[in-house]
Image (cartoon, rainbow over all chains, first blue to last red; front, side, top):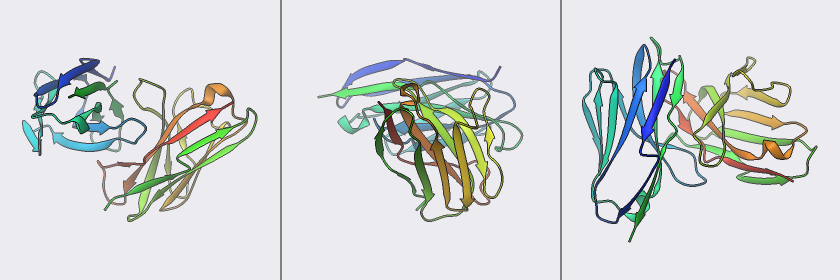
Length: 114
Length: 116
């Protein structure tokens, strides 16, 4: 069964600190993995996309890693800001083409406090 | 670029009425649009996939007669919630896949539906 799990479910950190969010998936055949940021009451916005051959990708203070062997990904946020408070969703595309299934993780709710 | 809009952003209606939500790709043509529903503290659940000019494909458990989807053009898809009930209250989000892109979808800002 294609499935995406995320941990932790929620996280509270102090402004300026770093944090790492985890994503484990059991998806086959793997096509790509995306991390989205969803502000409350808004639609998701893509942060990174990674294919099978990519190990790491950065987008400003966001760095995503992918281990295709262990089927794990992480999203590292450095020097957190209050505006980083949001839900972070790991999304894995399954299929030989990306027209196939897109599986959403449950999300990690991040709260950055002053 | 790659902006997707939804209208309205928020709607409150009485039980039994129908509500139409529009999803527009503002600066690109979308051959495929997706409709999602999101309940509080849960992730997005795909409701249906619509391709321009053809009938929508609904996910298992989603009533096609209740959630009418029309993808009349390459820039517009509509979701009509017919005979809405309080349990239909949710956050509805659309996304659009640009023509020629197989692995990209841009999300709209969402529509908050409250059925009294």
